[in-house]
Amino acid sequence: MEIVARRLDAVLPGETIESALAPGINALKTFDPPLHALEGRSFTGVRRRGKLLLLELGDLVLLTHLMSAGRLQLHPKRASLRDRTSRLLLRLPGDRELRVREFGTKQAAWVKVLRAGEVDADDSLASLGPEAWPDPPPLRELLDAPRPLHTLLRDQQVVTGIGRTWVDEILNVARLSPFKRGDDLSDEEAEALRAAMVSELGRVIDVYEEQVDIPLPEKFPKPTRVHAHQGEPCPQCGTVLEAVFYEDYVMSYCPRDQTEGRVLKDRRLSRLLK
Ligand SMILES: [Zn+2]
Image (cartoon, rainbow, N blue to C red; front, side):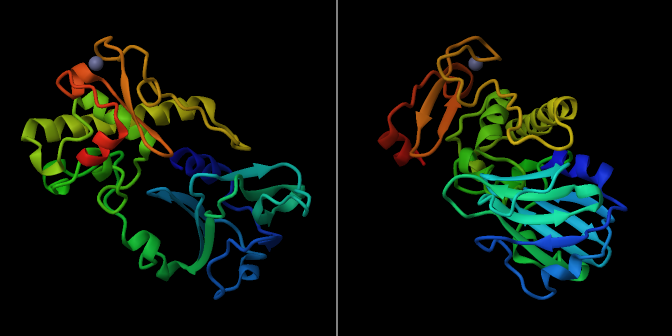
């Protein structure tokens, strides 16, 4: 979302919305102000908070969470209204269109039209923890809970901006077990984890900076070295990476750097440790 916000913030300010539509299954979660209140307004800025995107239009804000299958793109041509993946269409001058689409069967992506003064109090933002990047607070106190790091770091209410892909990269660089408890971190480990968080998320954003441009891709590059790379050498030490398989995702780690040589393959075992 960081790169989406940066790219859109570079091109949208000053652009006026000609019309706004939320076709098909309604992803629009608010009704006051109405969607058409956006029509005739100009973008004033675009920014990110956690995994949410805030499109600012003076005293109104369009807040959106694309969830896992949503995509936001600035297309040079308008979409056919029969495109069933369309969730929100913002028509701009010159036949261009800012389009939220969602792929797959889950209808999870959403948008809200809010008054600027109401944004911070909206549930989706008010519950978020501090940003993981670029300057997270000290982690010793923040993660002081009897929960494994792998779940704690992905909990957006604890710290926001890390998903299941980058948590594997971060823990590998910090050389910490995904099952280590947050309240079991030493000062040194907490500092190493914070440094890994900043450097790994920064590395990813650098790749996006180089490779991602308007109209914004449907699929973003995934510059991973650990996540889903089980069977390949660890980028830190060369040991073969292992993985724990969950129902809908995989957690990859280096047994030498992170789990004192232990290989945790069995799903039932991992569930016990979770
Ligand atoms: Zn390793």
